[in-house]
Length: 90
Image (tube, rainbow, N blue to C red; front, side, top):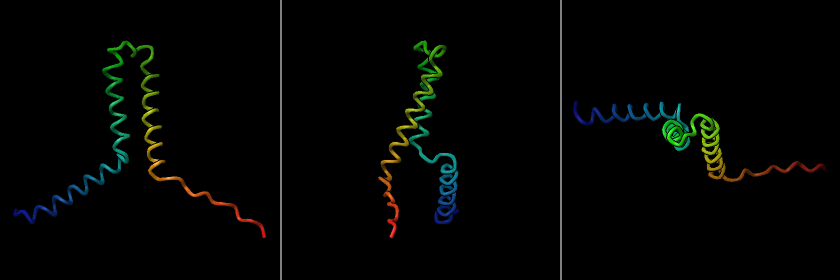
């Protein structure tokens, strides 16, 4: 195959992979944050001795913080929504 023949096929492959990624991962920073905290929970919490008594609570709180930060960032990126004023009676 020559190079011009491969480029459209490669572009189509990248487009398909990007669409597949978008189906499962809407926000990459949220996904990476969750994965980082799962790794922390798997390796750091047992090393600190927190896995048995506090591991679930620590993981829940950390994942909640990741979610709240993501919601805050997305809300501020969209900007404030305009308020609709009720129609005045005539």
